[in-house]
Image: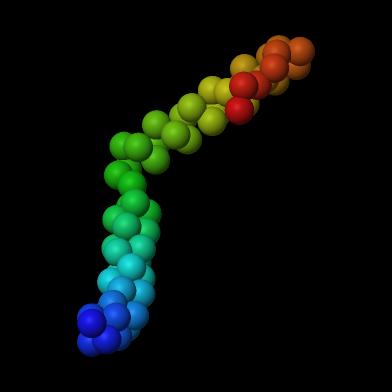
Amino acid sequence: MEAVLSFATVIGPILLLGAIIWAWTRNRKTSDRVDRKAEQGARDLQRELEERPDKKADL
């Protein structure tokens, strides 16, 4: 029983850190299409807010 606890104490955090790093790098990458669409949406919202200053932006 003591060996399992030692194993879990050492290997558990290493596996958790590996999973966090893997997920972070995987979610960090976006395609150019998604970037362009986000930039266009931001420009459209900014233009719309400039045209109608009383419009509330739902962020």
